Image (cartoon, rainbow over all chains, first blue to last red; front, side):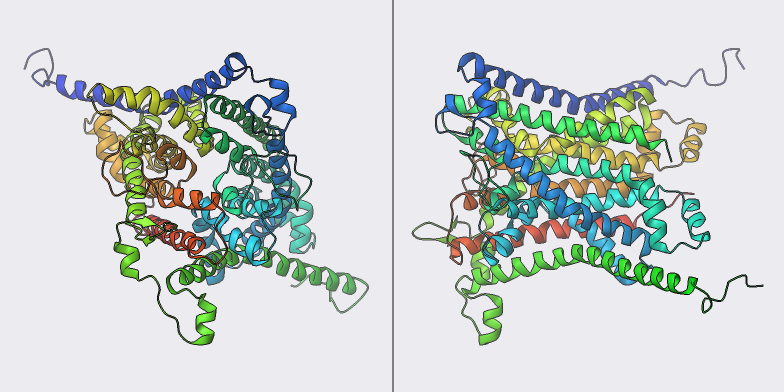
Length: 297
Length: 329
């Protein structure tokens, strides 16, 4: 028995090399996504910057005018307002029904077949391709109730799309409320609903709002359902209300990105910058809300 | 030992009755909200099947039921085995195979990108990364998942194709078309990486440290623990993430429409323009087809096919999660 130890003849070089190679592979994979995100952002910013610089697209026109057939007169305002309208209506349509469903499932629902069916159905709805919601609204509302391709129809499609997301995130927010708070309220003789209204909901509302804002940030970039219900791809005028025809930020991007001619691509990139900025602010708002209120529970 | 007051006595009686009635009313209302989600699924089925029936039989399903019969205008054989898709051509053909070909091309190709990279990312996050690295990498991946698909489409046609794909294949003297399946595969692969990574990582995190420590005690290296212990122990969750990513790729619309073009074609070359089921639907919706025309109804036949495919993937995902879930305590 030598003084160098029992395992001196064991050669671990290859095991170590394999380990290092594997580690580097995993690290490279993790960075791949980030690098691609970097490329994407740089590409969009570069293309967007070329718009005003090389093609003299006016930023003021871009932000204050509706779209036009001439690239130098084309603006994004019609699309922006269309998206604002869509978001407002989508919130109204989806928030109360979504939160109501979550309350039912978390606070009331007995563990029966029907409840399990509703829960299983929710996971499936979340996996339905967004374009199918567009098809549903096209058949039922646009052509069935002959509403036509109006803003309201677009927001119905988006509301159906975000409903599962709002329900699931609201359920999580409700679940995070400690059951001691419910028991305390029940012990004072409050009914289930009084407990929910005065104890559970106030505690859960920041989480519910966070989930809703994140869901809307997803909805504002959705293109396919709006194209299916017949959104105007190029918003050449401002929408006047829920029963007007409409454009939106993502459909406008689609239109410009596919239009022939070099200027349009830069308009699309500028429009993407605006869309991403809006989404980023919504996400930031959601994070702020979460950090501000989360610790209070 | 009951301390309850007798509810039939005193003024509280009326209040309790009203409160309970309100509680029941609210409960019914909230159940109604939850029922809407089920109604949505039912409506999707009814609308798709009804209109797709119109596509195959020229009458809507409810009309056919009332009249008790319908003649088939497009046979299922033609639809499912026909190799030419030209619904609005003067000599129309309704074989969905070219669209399925495009969809499978993107789905399978994207899986080859997102599954290895996503799994390796999950292993890195779960087994290697220090907490401070992890807390920066995860939000970055969330951003990647939050980028709208139309932006990925723009990225494909303004960067991936002109700067990456075309010069690369030019080196070998192969000309890639401006719209090509490879660009779509790459961007759909990138956008599904976060999905694979985050769900797989959750599953890996759920593997108890006892298993890892047992392997380390036997002299296993970190690489051997990752591949030999953690990955097998979390395989149901990891598989579930693959299926979700595939289901998402099947239904992916805008990135594919922009990157890959709109030319239905039977081909296995990733360098040519192709059409998927979803990009057909977008191109048809752009071209205002009259309600009730076969053109319009073809939307729903394709939509139903798409819906059934994603539904099958989702159900498979549910099944795997339930059947193969390992419960650690």
